[in-house]
Image (cartoon, one colour):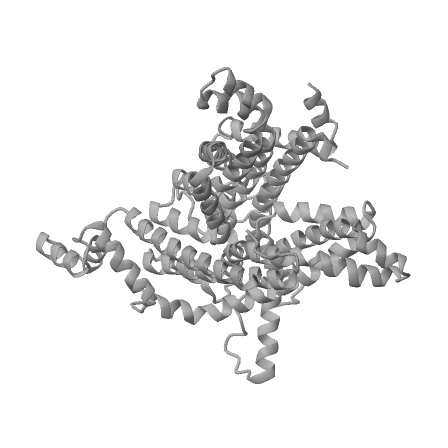
Length: 324
Length: 274
């Protein structure tokens, strides 16, 4: 039964990927003028014959369905076009930056989950207490703060005023650190952007953990656990928290798209050399193939991450048989 | 009336509403409050707040920050409200159709909403606005295009649960057409959750607009809070106010809107509070 669910989920991921590619094709068509106009503009001259030649070369004179098919074929082979500005394949430009973004996002997710679950369980222990209200107020505040501005405030406080942490980059420029020393240097650079990115999600994890724990605490098996004489600590750790964490797995998947969006902004604030700063540069240099490539790659990565969390959820929760 | 009394009984909702009114008043009065526009240079750059004639100081090239902040409120409110209206329009139309008729249309709509939940919509928005050329219009259209599924989902859920109720059956029996049933019978009953979602969306749209402007994807000829923050990046180290003040404006406005949303939620669904 679980295999059936997983197979269905795989098909869905493939369909999402196809939809992303179709959407991208129509986004390209949305730009005023076509690729030939852009290339002619870069070449600095254009006459009818030259434009015609370009359109034939890139298949722009073909009917729309043929163009669409060629585009899908190209993307399926991992060809996302050539960056106008860098004159390199878009895929290799993105892959070069991808590890940095993955590192930052993984760190942020870890901070958010650990911090949020801890805060949420503290709040759930005494609903209505001062600590509980503090968590709610904090969450309310973080929902209203623009992430990029929060990042700049972090720089202002921790780098400009107190000189505690490095304000930008992924490592100290011009330093020839190797091995552990270099790792430590990168870790230090990661704290500010990582925590900035994490705080919004930390707040929502805290709220979710709190609600889930209060819900679970009401169920019969918890009463049974108390009745058989377990201490309050054992009940809350082993029975309540464990069961409350299950929905958080799905939530992590659902929030991945927001995480990537936040990452674009936070990377820019901290000049973190990942995909987000790349997207910013693509916007400024009008490098449309690169910008669109970033959308395709991040969309596919997020849907893969969703696939993984959904499968994990189906394995962790015995109640899931077929799912939706 | 009962509704208004419940809404104004909540201190955060009253606070949010009052702050929102002040922001609206400043936005409307900006051209009358200040003789010069937000883009004109009035003095030396980076003068601190409280300098003669400069309540909020001056920015990197010597523009009056106070004027910029007041005009920024116009952009934020305009984009926030306009994009939400567009999104609610699309969401109502599609959500109501899907929820009322069900079938393949409903399936299709649900797949589309799921799609929008999974893909990184902010990156999609960057592509949309960059490809359409940054302007006030493209920001409104772009934000509406990535947020309408939220409304459609809520509307569809409401219609799905209301369409088989007795009063709807009764309307059908007396011979009302589908459109009339949707508009006069179901919609008024489906409204409360739609109002709550929309009020929350305005705040989010303001945050999204500020992020676009921060990245330089705003209208280059307009002064907005996000573009003020983006422009202050070079000055932040020596002139904190250029960064801090526009950010505080965003936080206060969005917080007020979220308080209003919470208040509406409590006032419209009194049973859910406990």
